[in-house]
Length: 158
Image (cartoon, helix red, strand yellow):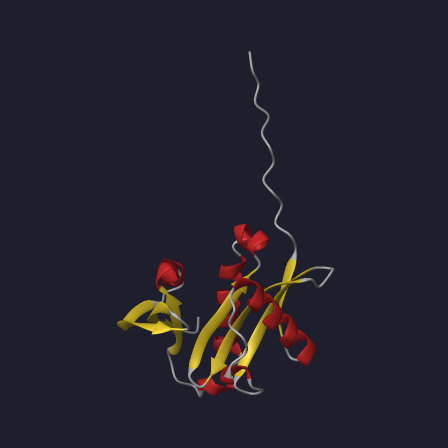
């Protein structure tokens, strides 16, 4: 008779998501992005154009993920989570954190409602963004050498 031993699920590491408000933290965001995709900083990474969020382990402060929210237009992008941490669904946590920021703190909202957030999603991740209320808008297009789809979320304050 054989017995199977259940293996406990891998415990999700403790993390925090902070705003990368120093050059050092911004560089950590870029370093995480470059490990996942060879997209160097662009004009939206200039000071004041975007807010970068950094996902890091606690208490070590090891950077493991990032996402960027440009201010004008309000566009979510450059989402990256290191491969060994993707199983924990930290990408979802990063998207939700940017949504919270837009609704609570984004000075560019100007009081309009709903707050629209755009994502240029690679085609294979459209279902990921759809989970957060993003809907397709317009035709597919090429960006950064890959096919993309403009998707828009209409965020509403609760």
